[in-house]
Amino acid sequence: QDELSYVKDETAIPSLLKKAKDDKIETVWDRALAMQPQCGFGEMGVCCTNCSMGPCRIVKISPDGPKKGICGATEDTIASRNFARSVAAGSAAHSDHGRDIAEALHYAAEQKRPIKDEKKLRALAEEWGIQTEGRSVEDLASKVAEKALNEFGKPFGHLQFVERAPQKRKEIWESMDVTPRAIDRDIVEVLHSTHMGCDADYRNIITAAVRAALSDGWGGSMIGTELSDILFGTPVPHEVEANLGVLKKDCVNIVVHGHEPTLSEALVLAVNDPDLIEAAKQEGAQGINLVGMCCTGNEVAMRHGIPMAGNFFQQELAVVTGVVEAMVVDVQCIMPSLPQVAKCYHTKLITTSRKAKIPGAVHMEFDEKNSVECARKIVLEAVMNFKNRTDNVLVPEEKVTGRIGYSVESIIRALDGITNTFAHQSGTVKPLVDAVKSGVLRGVAAIVGCNNHRVPADQSHVLLAKELIKNDVLVVTTGCGAHACIKAGLMSEDAVKLCGKGLATCCELLKVPPVLHMGSCVDISRILQLLAIISKYMNVDIKDLPVAAAAPEWMSEKALSIGTYAVASGIYVVLGVTPQITGSENLTKYLTSDMENIYGGRFEIESDPIKAAHKILDHIEVKRKQLDI
Ligand code: NFS
Ligand code: SF4
Image (cartoon, rainbow, N blue to C red; front, side):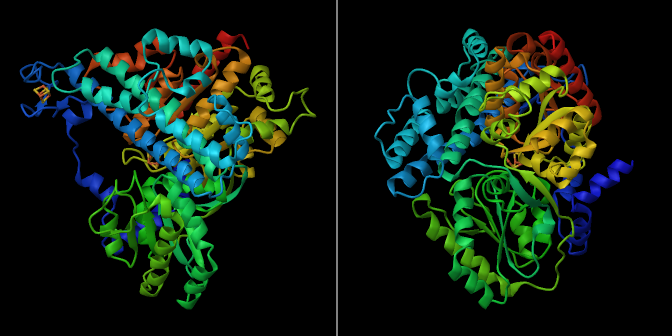
C-alpha cells in the first residue's frame, strides 16, 4: 500500500489531473472510463473486418452464436490475422523511422553537414563490406546510407544485420524460413497473406509475422539506431533531469514529442541560436527551455542531456500545465486529443510530418534537406506565443536527476573501467559475463514499452524494476518504461540502496545505476546487439542466456512487433497487458508455449508486476542451471 502511494505521487500526474478537472479538460483517463465496457469480441481478437461481407465475429460465450466468419474463417484464422497485421504495422512504423534516418544521413553527406561518429561509420561500412580506405566521411556516409536504404526492398538475399546474430540463432531462423529478407517485402507479405481468402493456417500466419518482426528488430530498428548514432552521435553516460517539473515558468517552453531524432536534433540547434534566445528575451522570457516527451525525449536526452519531460500518459498533462508555448510533434504515439487540450490554453500544437497531420494543429512541415531553417521557424513560432500565456499555470514540483546514456559502446566502456579489478581484455563483455557466471549478478532483464489505462501509469514498470534489482537482476530499459524508471529515481545513485548485495556491488564498481537507460524503442536493437555480443562471447545462443524481457504496460502495435522479434530471438517476454488473442485457444497456446519449442523464447501474460518479476527470476534460474552456472 505504501509503495503504491509513493509510485502514484512520483508521476506528477495527480496534481495535474486535478487541474485538468478544474479546467474541464478531458484526458485519456476520462475517455477510457467512457469506453467501458470495452468490446469483448475485440478484446479476444475474434472480430474480423478484412472484407465487406463482414464484420464477422466469433461468439465464444454461447453455444448458439456463429463459430465461423461468413467466408468460413475460424477464430484461429481471425485472431492470428489480426495479430499479424498489428505486428506488421508496428514493424512498418519502426522501419519507416529507420528509413527516414537513412535518408537524413544521405542528405547530411550530400550537404557536407557534420557526421558525429566517424568511428562507428567506418566500423559499419566495414561490416557491410564497403571499401573504407581513402574514402572521405561524406563519401562513406552516403554509401552506408544507400546500402541501408536498399535493405528495404532488395530483391535477393537477406538483411545484413542478420549476420550479427549468433550462429545457432541464424540456423533456427533458416530452418523456420523466417530469416528476414527485405524489410518492405516482409511487411507486405503479411498484409498479402492475411488478405481475405489467403492464409488460413494460424501457425503459418504467425511465421510470416515473425519474419516481419525480425525485419524490424534486426532490420529497420537497427538501421534507425546505428545510423542515428553515426549521424547524431553515440550516447555516452551523463546526468539528466526528468518529469514534468523540468518545465520552467519563466522560459519559453517547447516540448518535442514523437519519435524521429531528425526533428529534435534540429530543434536542439535552433534553441541555442543567439538570435532566437534574444527574441525570447524581447518577449519577456528568461530564455528557451526545450524538453522531450516519449521516445523523441529519450533520443535527445541520450545524446544531449535535454530534460525528459514525460512519457505517453503525460502528454496531455504537459499542456495542462499552461506553460507550454509549443508542443512539436512528428510521428507515432501522439494523441489526437492534443489540439482539444491545447485549445483551452495558449499552447500551439505543431505537426511536422506529412505522415501525421492532426485537425486543429498548426502544420509546419519539416524538410530534412532544410532542417535548420525549419526548426528555426518552429522555435520562433513558440517564442512569439509566450505573450499569450495566462495566469492559469501549474508547474509540478516533481523532478529528479538520473544517469543515462547507456549505448552498447558505453556499457562496454564502463566494463573496461574495472580492468584493474578483474583480469580483463578491454573492449569485451567479459566482466559482465564473469559477474553473471559467479552469481553475483543473476541475470539481465529488459523493461520496455508504453503506458496503458489498464494499469496505473508507470506503476507496473517501477514495481517490476524494483523487484528485479532487489533480486540482483540488472535492468535495461527503453521507451516509456525508461521514463517511468527515471522518474521513480531508479537511475540515480541512491537506487543502489534498493538493490540486492550482488547488484549493488556491481553498480558501485562500474559506477552505473541498476537500471540502465538504453534509449528509445527503436534502440531495443541495442539490447539485441548486446545479447548477441554476450552470446558470441559465451559461445551459446541467445535463448541460453539468463535474460528476459517485459512490457508491463504496453499498448502499441510497435510493442507487439518488438515482443514478437524478441520471442523469435530466443527471449522470454512477459506482457503485463493481455494481447487480443484469447478468443483463439490455439493461437494463445502457440504464442505462450509452442513458440518456445521452435525459437526458444515465448510470450507470458502476467498483469501483476511482482508475480511477473518472480516469473522472470524463475526463468533466469532455469537458464542458469542449464548453463551449469
Ligand atoms: Ni514505444 Fe515510443 Fe512510449 Fe510505447 Fe510510444 S513512445 S516507440 S510505443 S508509448 S514506449
Ligand atoms: Fe468475415 Fe471472412 Fe470477410 Fe473476415 S474475411 S470479414 S471473417 S467474411
